[in-house]
Length: 321
Ligand SMILES: NC(=O)c1ccc[n+]([C@@H]2O[C@H](COP(=O)([O-])OP(=O)(O)OC[C@H]3O[C@@H](n4cnc5c(N)ncnc54)[C@H](OP(=O)(O)O)[C@@H]3O)[C@@H](O)[C@H]2O)c1
Image 1 (tube, rainbow, N blue to C red):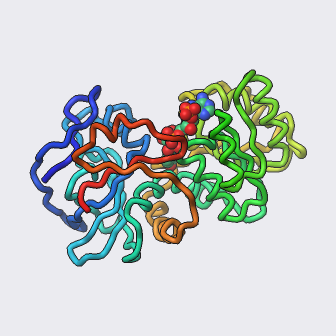
Image 2 (tube, helix red, strand yellow; image 1 turned 90 degrees about the vertical axis):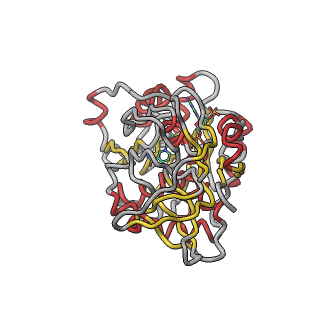
């Protein structure tokens, strides 16, 4: 079969012939229809993800949409650290980490949206007791996961959604997705951080895709501007596109009712994640969320890797049609 194969961590994958997989217990082989090229897949392919054991070759791809032997459609998630990923004509799917899709589901739409949408969906539904009527702030709202976080928060009943990010053109799009307030990080970082703080005085949940310098700059002003310091603020670390670390003054944890937590593989159990797949997939299939997609055939995997991607859009690779 054909697959995207990484043979060197500092080079993009190539489309090569590899042996077909054989299923084990609780596994089935599916024809792979669509696979998202998520940031997580790029870090898998360049060996930088924390689950990478440095073993080559790697077939990248952490999830996807496939067609079973009986013709039904399935969305599946592969185990962390897998080196036989989903960017191949066939994939081995664990029946306990997959969910059947309706026959009319668009495989490309589902493959594009499930991973980025799941980031905010799990954070709100599995990491905190989010309830409709609460106020949400998305820190880093311009990317694929951030744009979907704005929409997921709105769809789950947020009373207000504040979207924070950089880039005037990209920020201008966010009200159409459901953001009530948009705060720009462009310009002077301290002034931007103060603006974030002022906008967050009543926020209940921060969905943080940035971390690094913007989070470090914003967290002080956000805490300083709390209308009621005793009101709980759940700050959920989801991504770290702006840097892997922050320095946090000890007093920040005493002066306000701040809960700092993360959301991802590990902090959310596989069982909990799988339990959420079906409902999120239904919302995506129903067209609840807006997301741009760029589609590439598996044969063009090198172009897929190098393609310039508009903000919020997701590259999807289609091994078979
Ligand atoms: N924990 C989870 O469950 C989970 C699931 C999915 C994704 N994630 C993580 O979430 C993060 C975002 O994923 P994604 O799919 O949305 O990626 P993406 O589509 O590549 O978007 C990244 C966005 O971040 C912006 N950005 C980068 N550096 C920034 C900075 N210093 N200040 C402000 N904005 C900045 C980028 O804007 P520019 O174009 O200006 O650079 C871009 O709009 C990644 O770290 C990903 O690994 C986590």
